[in-house]
Image 1 (cartoon, helix red, strand yellow):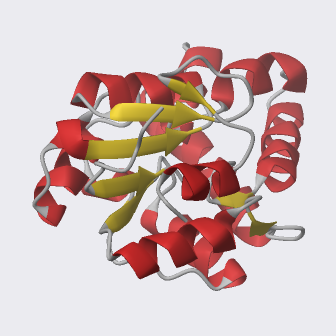
Image 2: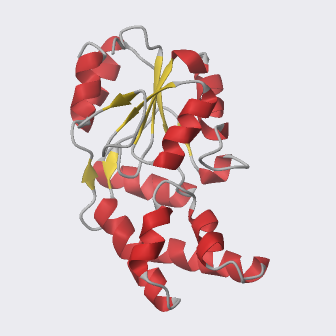
Image 3: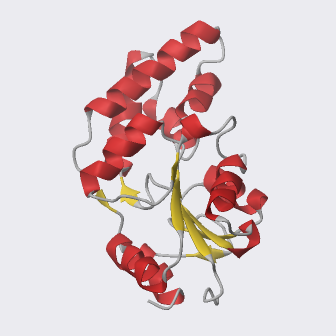
Length: 204
């Protein structure tokens, strides 16, 4: 696929720009066990969606206050464990290409703002624009985050490349009208093995 006409790149954070898979799995496993749930069942639906959405799906009997408390507990576990977090494969190459080409870019994540900032700080990445769950009314798979990022960068969503690693994220990018590349074999316009491949396709 020819990506040389792309005018902006919108990147998911967890599992894409930053390899947080092990930390995310540890957090969900610990949280699931605290609530008497099978971790594998929770993990099967958690990736790419806002934490509160998954909490509601696996604990539908909770009232609003209880669900908020359960979500806050998940966030506390996540904030306390950042061990093993590293840049995603090919991230340095991709960011260097974006800088060299002068392409605007943003991070659009389902994490809350505190978690996003500490995660990016841990790997030394400072995006020119960061949109978190706290900046939207609806998280992925809703396209709001990607549409907002494109608008703030002043780029038509159709001229944006979204890079994701989850089904909800790909759905959000597609609904925004962007070209979507996906890791981990997730179906998208372009399946990639790493961010270095995106850098090459962008002319890196």
